[in-house]
Amino acid sequence: MSAVEPSVTAVIATRGRGELLRRAVRSIAAQEYSGPIEIVIVYDQCDIDLLEDLLPLPGDVVLRTMANTRTPGLAGGRNTGIGAAAGELLAFCDDDDEWTPTKLREQVALWARFPGAVGVSAGIEIVTPSESIVRIPPEVTTRSDFLASRVGEIHPSSFLFRRADLLELPSGVDEKIPHSYGEDYDLLLRLSEQGHIVSVERPLVIVHWDRTSYFAGRWEPMARGLGFLLEKHQDLLLDDANAARMCGQVAFAYAAAGAKDSARQWARRARRRRATEPRVALTWLALSGLVSPERIVAALNRRGRGI
Image 1 (cartoon, rainbow, N blue to C red):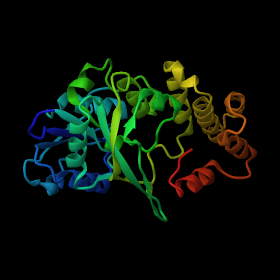
Image 2 (spheres, rainbow, N blue to C red):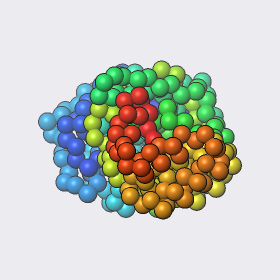
Image 3 (cartoon, one colour):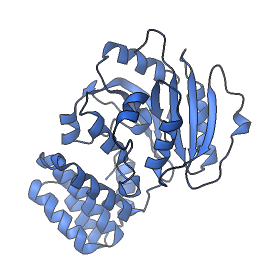
């Protein structure tokens, strides 16, 4: 890290959710950060919106827009942005989330305390239709921690990495992951082989669960993506609790997709790892037809949780 606050590129991959995207861009442009900020918007499978109504942005903030030139989907969009970025540091922001004004300043200050870290995260505030819920990650998270849990408090909209590290990472954000589902977890697993992730222990990102997610109802892509990760990272299965969690997620997704045989197979696999895995019960509930998968997920989301 240099003595002067380093330049930062924020990459937003989007499919054109105009008003949400504008909110995200405004929050990045409003950073209380003395270093240069570049915002790269990558449009995936949609028309480019130049966002001219937001220009000019304050201070040294530069806005660039471009089309995804790689594999269609989130992974390809992020890789397009990484390749085009000019900043020393690289951040992600989902197009429906927001940064609080001190995010970059506090993250860069923490990185100065932990120069050996491979990346920096921060706490999040999850906004649901009924309330706001704060989730705070541990100050230091190692690869062993990620193998034991996804550590959901470390959200991709809080990621801050060195751009050089991402460019050196084989395949970058893995575009082979089906539908890019779980690409953030895969990225954390691979980067944490080189060092730990540190996090500012207070909420610096607002995550909106008060709108429809891109993956809402897209159960088969979720199941395929998670199954791919388990095949790619066999060490995810070393911890019984984490293996049961992920197998249970795949089981529920297949149940919601109507693939009953696959759901039962993955549910049995999860239960063998941990008899009390709650996602097994949720899978059987979804298979029973008594409660729809959507109602189950909505109830979890209201508590700031996912399946």
